[in-house]
Amino acid sequence: MEVTQEAVREVLRERVIDPELGINVVDLGLIYDVAISGGRISVDMTLTTPGCPLAGTLAAQVEEVLRQAFPGLDVEVSLVWEPRWTPELMSEEARRHLSL
Image 1 (tube, rainbow, N blue to C red):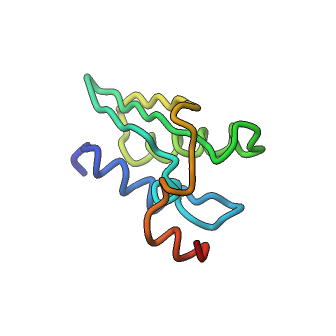
Image 2: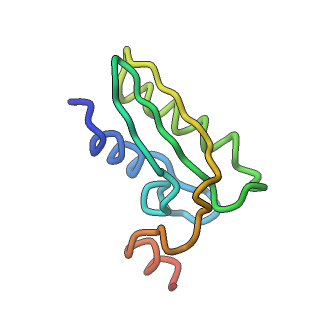
Image 3: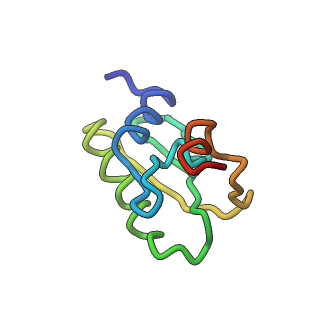
């Protein structure tokens, strides 16, 4: 699989599901940025709230899934809090799932 921003997002869409909401992290709007450069995938992501009990779990899962999907590349996942997450960042599909 070629390493592109869309390929990274598709892997995360398929394999990293928020266990509380049952929706993937991409459609939830938690993935803010994906950068690919010099053998490294860098992901900036957020959570629905800074005090989310899944903070370490989801970030670690994103990292592990990307390492498995793109072996040989370094993966760096950063949790960011700006801009603050809001429900407007969710995809239409995620909003329908949650009846918003």
